[in-house]
Length: 378
Image 1 (tube, rainbow, N blue to C red):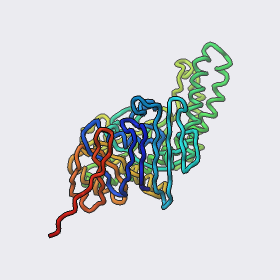
Image 2: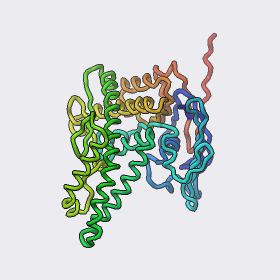
Image 3: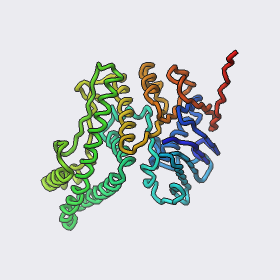
Image 4: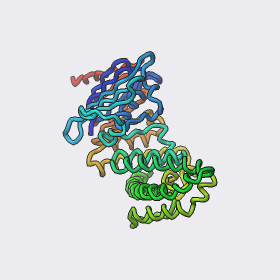
């Protein structure tokens, strides 16, 4: 997959901007607070329907304006694809996929796959379980439409059951309906656990190879999925549905006492181990960055395996987070992957000399393509 053209209208600090990307490495450079990350944000929204920086779409509207528009044109498996996202205070959100209007932005998930690697990606390694669940959910929603529907349904069931748990203390009718919620929750939750387990297993294999290459075999990694029961790769989704139903039925009184849903994949996590040690507690910052880098590359290979094409990689100010060896490793490894990088300089790395590179100077909400001077061969 390659992004060909992006149009922004009244988005963040861009009044009106058109960018035509190259199919190799694209560098957005300039001083801080000029609008570099805003471009990556618009691209990420075109892929996921969500911003990685805010949950409030009003934050995305240029100051003093009523709404914004993002238009993206991309090539996927030799076919032209287009996505248009519009938002205004009065008409709210809407999207068009290849000219067909969609009322739910979640409908764009999986249409165009992009991976974002930003300083916040480190939170997947060192942050809370919620950060790792979010990482896994976005990956699976982009690559599996069934997962998206299961997750929506499951979250709705948990929300309704939470209300029943709170009201059940005083109203008997709510307490009596909880076993019914449990049956539906276990059916959807078991399938979610099964799909997450398979994704973690695939990511784990890719990540092991990357860690081995990055560290010249000096270190090893492992991803360990944690859920409400023991994990067995040979078990099918029905096994996890039955296990979850058993947990829910046996834990009714405990959940009633604290008015919370405490069993199910909404409490899942996965441990990221380096040399057998939990990365959150025992790894240095440098090791955590190495793990984050290898996890992003594993995600890239996973999407390519499932979707049959490489995704686009968005690198938001992460090269400054990596030492020179890891910068070179990352850029060398991105052969045939369209990459869009934000940085404060033009990153004249040796590894870029044989790659197609297009540069844009970003200043005060304007993206200016840099015309490279031809070398004098005389």
